[in-house]
Each structure stands twice: as C-alpha cells, then as structure tokens.
Length: 229
Image (cartoon, rainbow, N blue to C red; front, side, top):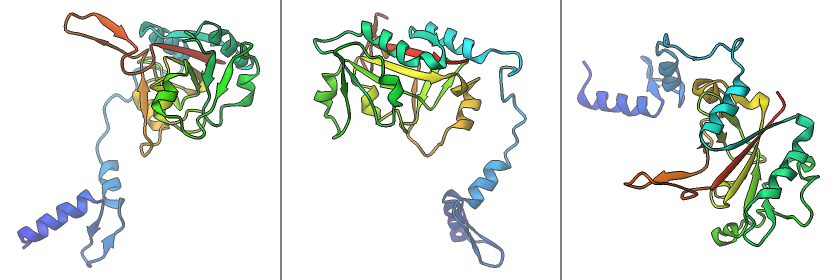
C-alpha cells in the first residue's frame, strides 16, 4: 500500500517526465510524459480543409488581407523586384533605410531603391536605434491559411523579436510551400522549444469607444509578399 509520500513523489516524477519502474529503475526524463501524451485519444477533426481541394495559398492571401495586411503574390524569381517596389512606399521618417536580419538571402537586396540604407543588427541595436529605422524585412517560419497568420520562430532570416516589433513597417516574405492549411498543420511544422511570434495583420487595438488604432504594440503596416505557388 502506497503512502502519501509515495503518491506525492510519483506526481513530481510524472510532472518532471520521470518515473520509477517496479524494479526501482528511474525512467529517463521526458519518457513518461511523451508516452502519456502519445496515448491521448485524438479522434477529433484534425483539419478543416481538404488538401487536395483547397488552394491554401489563395486562402492565406484572402485571410491576411481581411486583417488589413497588404498582400502581394509574386513569382519566386521576382522577390527582389517586389521588395524594391514595396520599399518605394514606406513611411520614411526622414530616413530611407531597411533593417535586415542575418541570413536574409543576398539576392533579395539586389533591387533596392536608390539611396536605401541597409541596417544590420550587429551589434544589437537599442530600442531607440530600432525606432529610427522605418522598415524591417524578414522571412518567416510558417504561415497559416485559415487565420491569415504569419509565424516567426526567430531563426535565420527573421532576427530577434524586437526587430519586428519596433519598426513601423514590416515587410515579410512567405514562400508558398511555407503556407499550412490550419493551426494543427502549422504546429506540426514548428519547434515548440523556440520562441514563436504569431502575426495576424498590423498591430492594432481599440479603446473603450471601439476606435481602432494601429501601430500600438508593433508595426503599423504589414506587407506580405507570397513567393511562388
């Protein structure tokens, strides 16, 4: 018969992903939790779309536009030209500059407007310095068609989170093969151990009188370039 102490320790081990077998051997961290998670019945609907019958790229473009993002579909070989065109209309704040994280493909920067300054986050820019740069260009980790959402995991070509929160204009390139049908599909492609940022349209809020104000918690303008597809 187990004691209260045994029960408490068993719960602690379960929470830590460890357990003791009947022979007193401790199972490695994560094994019990993973096995328990895998054993949960999942007979619910996993997808709301038939992959064979839904144009998820078109759906993503439609839903992102519903969130007041500017959406442009461009051929894969036309990314640089589309970036150059998008940067022609950024709110300049007196400085024509674009912040570029590490690992952005060099070819994306081959057609920038004349006089555009390319700003790097090395050494790391302060919030005040970031506030002086009108635009940031990034890639993404995945996009979600059903919700019109862009997801960043802040890996190569995306930069740290502050880079996409402080500048007023976020220009993001989404490859067609990065568009997932819905949230379960997107989560299956993401690493849960990474910091994830979900972006659905430009940053916006409404006060008690329901007056919409954009650019409060992040960029005022979100421009999405969907490449290929």
